[in-house]
Length: 224
Image 1 (cartoon, rainbow, N blue to C red):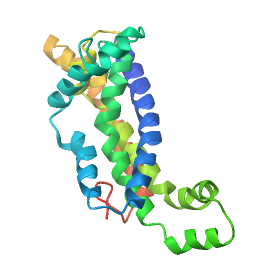
Image 2 (image 1 turned 135 degrees about the horizontal axis):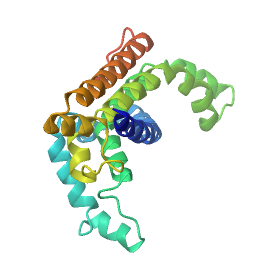
Image 3 (image 1 turned 180 degrees about the horizontal axis):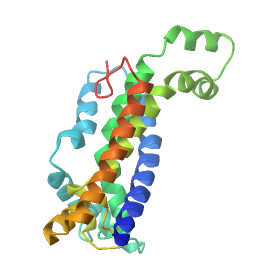
Image 4 (image 1 turned 120 degrees about the vertical axis):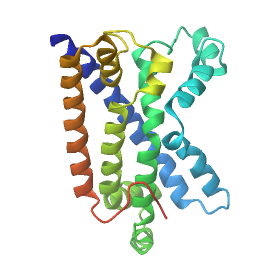
């Protein structure tokens, strides 16, 4: 049972890094989509949301093709001495992409709910765009962003298919919580499987409760 804490610690590490990256890129893309006025906006939004509905193994295959040593990105990274396949960093990439739509959708909805009159009033007072974002727009949208980040963390913590495809199942190196559950069940280790399932379930329930309190009246999966 002591070994069960190892995949838990690795999963928290992977989910934490994935969530941080999702916040950085998700907020930036969500703000751009919220402000972009184009007929192509919905198409771009749909493409970025694909990881949410795409089978995890298919997503993992795409990542393997792109990040493998023969892939367009993987070959370039290999010249720099960087390898993502069968590493915990690869698991971070898989978890980040799988959870990205949750931050994107929530942040976009939050940005679109900000009253444009408040932003215009700040501009008339001479506030620059950078200051406007950090002092007006972001504080008004922060609840939605945090709620999306919490859901992304829970999604990254439970990621299985894409992580298994790109990072493999190496105990102590790339074996995350969900993969450890699968391995325990396959090995007939019910005690370890029950413990890991309980931990995952408790974390997921807590995250959903907190996210629900942050956005009680807004859908986290849809935007205007």
